[in-house]
Length: 241
Image (cartoon, rainbow, N blue to C red; front, side, top):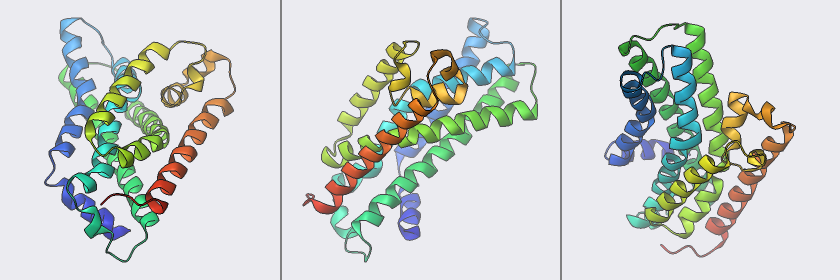
């Protein structure tokens, strides 16, 4: 499995998708940097970190993660390398798990990029109130939200295996982003898997009067169902090569 992950990193070195994901991870902080001067949006690091975390985990990450999923799992089909990869003495199940691990590592990298870019643009804008503890807490909050969001994207793995083109993933990601915008603040928001991560990490879930077991249960159920379906499809079905 470690060999597969190393191979994925080698592929990323030649990929424009990785660079695009880095830019998208920094985009919320760039937009808030512009808003600071254009609209006087934020005056403190606390407000900046909170706003960037909200935009990233509730909006930008949805579209970004769907693109990454489609790239990681559908690329082997599009580049006709899956047949070669499966000749290596490793089970299809381990191959699929290695893709999940790579997706998680990619998310960790993007989380670091978002937090560091927010820090840099905050200093560039001359904001006040920075402390190391504030940065650590903000990073931990975003990391927690992104890991929870990672769990909710297992159904996209199946979609990417079933439909290898990136267009459906982008459309689905854009649709979920719109759904998050519409659902946030509604009483049934804790029951929507892709809204739950931000509500839990930010503490806003307390405003909805539901047990924490509900959103955690929704996220876990989404992950298990998506993982099971994608595993069965990839390992048991005659996947076109």
